[in-house]
Image (cartoon, rainbow, N blue to C red; front, side):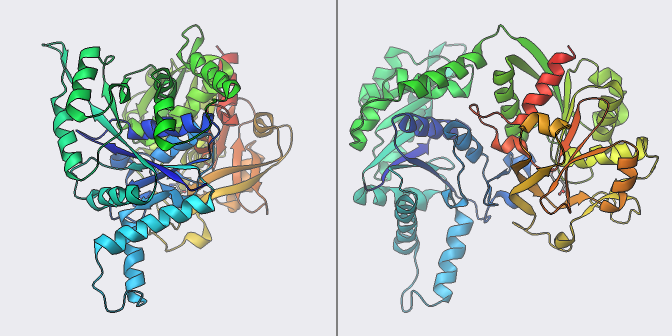
Length: 533
Ligand code: GLN
């Protein structure tokens, strides 16, 4: 079957959750048994997200194949429960570098190379090839940014051309504001935005309206009237308790039927069993009857919650499995450098130190780890969190006073954490130890084995530093457990405390956590927290 396409555009403003809408469409088609694939277009000229600051752009998501991609990929994978590849991420940077390389190879000899038709044709070919190689029935393309941006304009024009060749459905995700004084939902921003889209030669088939409260019938009719969109394709997407509810809300409004009709897809039966399982999980997220576990996330980018979105989601998934609700305390690690950790941390049932880069806030994280170890608060260290767990242990248990990482003090002699030899001198994009790596679990009497129930596990990585083998003997002698190594035994992948629940992993297990498959270390953390309640 030839691949069909759904194109998701955003209007009025950014931040409306196009990623969640695209993921929900993918989920619905998946529930009908179609082989679906997301593609995200990002207009920036960076090749990928690898060199972007999580404080500005949100979390850098990593795929098995080493690609560093936009955090929307986390949403796609979590909704679809499917591992994706970097081919699904199309950026301005990738497109322009590819076309210039082609030009240098002389592939356009004699022609002046232009965005239309050369770049647009290249994009369409890419989409067609991807559809073929992945045997996708439907590709859902999320266009990053908002209609009217300069960065995505050529891409949107390409989508218009795509629709001339292939069955393509357009969805506009828009915003319907409500002025609290008037108490009325306003359609004008959408009406104006719609005119802009129509001027580009695209007539959206659906409008998905983000709003605080449910869309009123009156507003739905008005939008249908002004936009030529059939009223039952003007869809409500008001704030819900959890984003995982969005596919269910779209199904309740019959989006599935309309979508299948427009795409001319014949399967008419949803997989009821799969849907029921999903519904059950979503209901568990919403249900309030469970005990609450208070988890402190001690990080340096906490002001922008998007920086740690996968950690937050992994906790939510693990909470569903462990039948607890999660309360997250976001703790800016620098505050633990000048205030007493006791007063900030004493209400917590568990502590996580997530990944991060650079020196700022490090000492505060180390203080939090010391507190967790001494007070036996269940602890999970992710990547940087594991490295700091080793430094804390070296300083406070092994008496190596100045234990440090060469990332924070390049001249330190007590380089308990040191650069991976292959990483020396490389500082540009795509050069870290990235992607899925296997880890061998040392023995069955470890937190790691009790969590994973396997002796070889695979998780995603993104780091440049590692535990220095020179100090391993000292650390082990004083009781630190090395519970996971690389398959060749050369790099330490997981460390643990002996006397209480504390585990650090060099990987980012949060990146593979799904509602259906919660990350084992997060589940174990919550189980340990439950026990100590
Ligand atoms: N900065 C550390 C390193 O590069 C940790 C990276 C991370 O937490 N992802 O090794």
